[in-house]
Image (tube, rainbow, N blue to C red; front, side):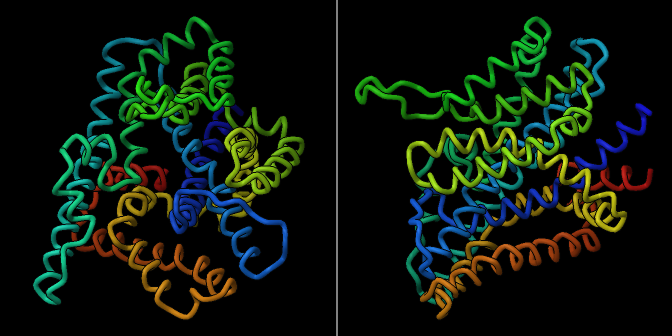
Length: 379
């Protein structure tokens, strides 16, 4: 019975990865800044309601869930803490995290130079802003503080969480569930790890790599892994209550979008939304076709995540912004729906092309995840 629960848990987590990546693509269609939503049914406002609701609210569960998965699998097979266990886990993450992190940032820099010099040579254009930023910023800024391939901030934070894993183990070893409650209180208070700038007399500068989202959800996953909790068994106890609460706080977050209260409400939504996401996927993969599809596509998730910002999604957005669709709320809505799936199609095409033509290079770029997925699917 326990083995069946563990197998089901692994299947659900594997199946969740691809839909979460689709949510990430939707999130990256819009600028990072949220805008207030007016409660009227004008065409433009319906577009804002729909797009902001997905990109800046519904999709906000994606990064917390990926951090949770990482913390959970870091400690899942732990029997007794030792330096050997720590060294082994770090060694694995050099291949799965650090190497891809460096490679994809280097690829982004190369793409910036190639694109800009090609445009200068072919069209006599001036260098773009991104080339100036690459030239003017230090290696620390480009590769760590604000990665030039920006979505890789997640990998940067995950590298830090992995390095700090002994602290997570000690924290939960001695505080147990109370440690998780402390993290929860900090998270819900919207506290962040910042450096104080005395001249401004306020908190402004994030400590790169130590976001509260990473600490909270890698920590929550670590707790579940250390104490060998079954995530599905926990989530299923609150299936209907959490679904209702998730919907309520999602609606409240959308209403408060772009306002100060939003930061507090959306975090409550995220907590309940994570539980609901597990329950939904547990229900959905009862259909074998959905399970096979999502588990197969989960092998592509890391590649899509790392590759989509290398001009793919931005050029797609740029194309639609130059069409007549950008002149109306309905057109913007259509563009908003098409951009993520066009980006997804291009990324999947590149993935399967590399898988056929250069599988070893692809395995290097995705940190060996392709091989891991093949092994899992064969079991």
